[in-house]
Length: 561
Ligand code: OGA
Ligand code: FE2
Image (cartoon, rainbow, N blue to C red):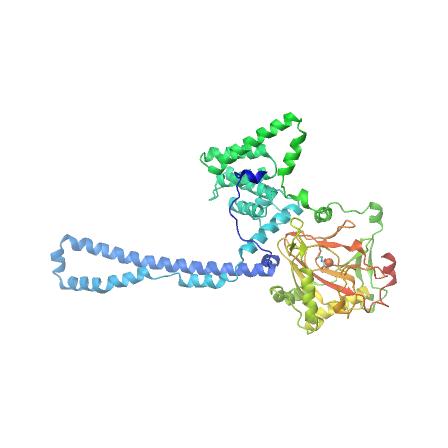
């Protein structure tokens, strides 16, 4: 109905978008490289400016010298040329010196800078990366219920370096939402850009363009009245705006029609009408209930632990039934949740160990494909990566897409690579009492801007028969997760099925069983890593497998599970 009228417009397509490997911005390591690249480019740009200035200086000197000379010469040309030296110098100037000046004027001082820029450009983010980063901001906005004003003023919790969004930045976010037919966010960000302009911010983006997008986004969400008001405002600024003039008539026509229908059947139809044009893609419509719960938990809301249950959670010194390595120095163990049982160990990895693990992982996080150098394990590593990058169904289109599933970078570390890795594996074995030989390698993950891991099970389900077959070690019986950084805001590990949120705390680790002692998967362990709002998040985890645990799974814990 709407499109057939043909008055309503679509803007030309914006930046191209595909679901490729747009994960540049997902790890802080690469972003750090970009910052350094940019710093080098600024140095090179400053060198260019200096060279250009010194060139101009030379030209200026020449000009002023000749200015003086010719002023004297033209006063009495014959007398001037009567001096043989002057005559000779005139010849010399015209024959050679002007040519020298010409080459100086023509000299290109930008070579160094331009070649530097060309060289570095190959590492620059692409349109896809920029769109990905914009979408990450929109996602954060939804998850953490942040209004556009707070966001654009940079007033986020826990920030140390305040950063604000300009009119153009807001406009850019609006356009990304628009090209995704996400009119909810289009409206929010175009309105924010407009209000910054209204507050007097200077920008090359004009109000007419913003109002054009805004009225369309509002119209798409079914608010004809506001669409009309916005179109009128646009026409005040640009009375000849063709599309707006067309839309004005269309909106008035639609409103009149609506009014008639309302009068005819007392407004019962109106709702339907609005419903039809309402293509709002805001958080309220297409988010699944699980997503709602997940987002709530990410914000630290909706945690479902009654005071009675809370009272039964304890903390204690723990040495795993007298493990010799922990008798003298037991670790602090805290109950985070009862069902499923999630325990946290405090101070189980030192800052030095964390640094070593991060340094070992960093060069690998930068690589597009991550593989374990050990032969044989390599395939497994690929398998894990592809599993983590698994395709998901886009709720909008039903199409398979790679977006959002896990936005992080990971690397695998083997015990033989560094004594610290071996020591860490041993520690997990000592504290859990579980066999590490059949566990997967230590995985290190770094979540950057908007980095997250959507709700998932760590264990393989029955409908995924081949999940861990190639490993030959059975299913993932338990998960050990080290937090290797504090996160300024966001980044919790949440369990939407049971309403638990676990907050990252540097040096601690959480542990839970994914399977019941029977080998059945415990569906209440479904969990997710919330997007990082401010800061960045480092974790490392160990996925422990069934084989080898036959005589090891401690009885104390099995009773609880
Ligand atoms: C995992 C996982 C959660 C987190 O690695 O399996 O779910 O908070 N991580 O990083
Ligand atoms: Fe997980």
